[in-house]
Image (cartoon, rainbow, N blue to C red; front, side, top):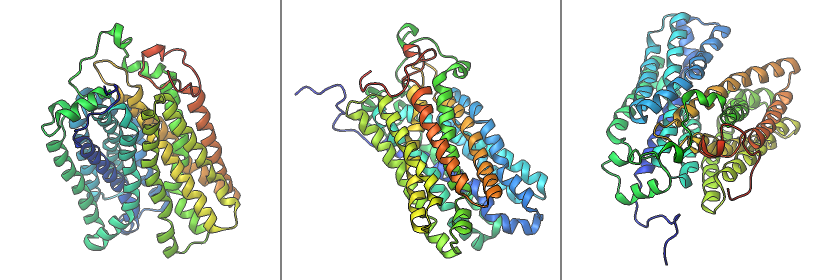
Length: 453
C-alpha cells in the first residue's frame, strides 16, 4: 500500500519532545521566580517595613514591563533565534531574581521587579518559536499545551518549594536558590538546543517527519513571494484583524484565569470559610485539573487535525468549547455547597486551560510562510495585550467584591467575559492560516468554516 502524504515515517526519534520539555521547565522556573516574592514577602517586610499598599505595588510591578516588552522581545526572538534569546531571557530574570536580596527599600525593590519583568517577557515568544521550528502542524497543539502547562506547574510548585527554601535557607537564600535553577537551565539549554537541521542527536527520520509536517526547521528556503504570499512586515501585524482578534480573545482568557492566580485562595477562605489546612489540601485541586486541561486541550486539537479537519476548525472548536466550559465560574457562588463550588471552579479552570493550548498555538499557525519568522512577534503581541486584561481582572473582581461584599458579581463578570471571548474567536478571528495567504490581512471568513478549506 502506498503511504499517503500524512503518513508519518515508522522510525523517528523523540528529540523534539526533549526540546519542548526544556521549554516546559523554563516556564515552570519563570512562574516560581515571579511568585517567590509573594511567598517571601512577610519575611522580607520585617526588614523593609512595607505597608500593604506598597507591597501590592511591588507585587504587580513586573507586570508593567512584562506586558510592555512582549512585542520587542518577540521581535528579537524572530531576529536572533530561540536558542540565544531563550537563554538570555532566563539568565536575565534569574539575575534579577537573585538581586532581590540587595534591595534596601521600596525604590530598589520596585526597580528590580521592573527589570525582572523585562526578562520574563521573552519566555512565551521563545517557546512559540521552538514549536514552529520543531513540530509539524499535527503536533503543535499538544506541544503548545506542554510548554504552557509549565505556568500551572510553576504556580503549584511555588508555594511549597519557596516555603521549604525559606525554612532551610532564609528568605534571601530562597531567591538565590530559585535564581540558580534558571542559570543551570540556561547552561543545559545552550548545550542541547540547536535548530533541527543542526541538532546532532536528531535522526533523519525525525527531521523528515517534522519538515514534511510543516515545521520551519531552518533547512527549507521560503519560496518566491508569488508562491509564499505577499511579504509580511513587522508593522503589518498591527493591521491584521486576526492578530488583533487573537490578542483580544486571549485577553478574555486572561481575565478568567487571573482569578485563579490572584483571588482564588481568598475566595475559599473568605466566602467558603476554608481553614489553612483545607486551603492547602483542597485549594490545589483546580490547579491539578488545569494542568491536565492543558495536555487534553492540545491533544484534542491535534487529534481533530489528524482526522482531517482543518486547522481553523480544530483550533476554534477547542478554544470556543473550552471558553464556554469556563463560564461555570459564574455559577460557583450561586450554590450553598462549598464542595460543589470547588467542583465548578475546578472544571472551569480545566476548561480555560483546555482552550489555552490552542490559543498559544495560533501564533505559529498564522506565522507567514516567508524567510523571516514572525511567530515570536505574534506571540509577543498576543501576550502583551492579554496581560493588560490580566492586570485588570484582579482589580475589577476585587472592586466588585469590595462594593458588594461577595464574589458573586466578580465571578459572573468572568463568565460574561468568557462568552465575549467565544464571540471574538468565532467572528473576529478569521481563517487560521499563514498571514498573507488568501488575503488574511484583508477580508476574512467569519466563524468556524467547513472542515475542508
